[in-house]
Length: 130
Image (cartoon, rainbow, N blue to C red; front, top):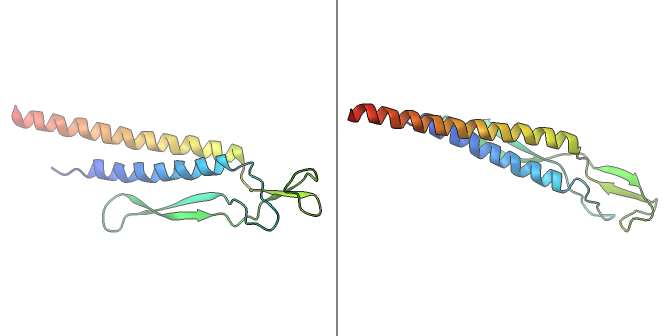
């Protein structure tokens, strides 16, 4: 008997957890202003690839957006540049929340596969003891 279903779903759980981590960073920094002359927060994406040595997927890395950010005119802000603009990350909260729901549902689906596979394997063992 092989346990591929649990292993494959486990890789999916890991990938979705990393995606949830990246999304939580993005959401936490959506309103983070950047002082002039410093590198601002950039949106993070999780790159996932199919496993080559074993079935399932793996996280190939976390990629940052190339967007420079959004400038908002607010001359009273302490981080305003000489022209009165403040730089914020180019992160859309609505998009992040939508992806958060997708990542959560994917995580739940993989957890359900692990649970169902475990139940199936236990039933097969009971038949063998029968």
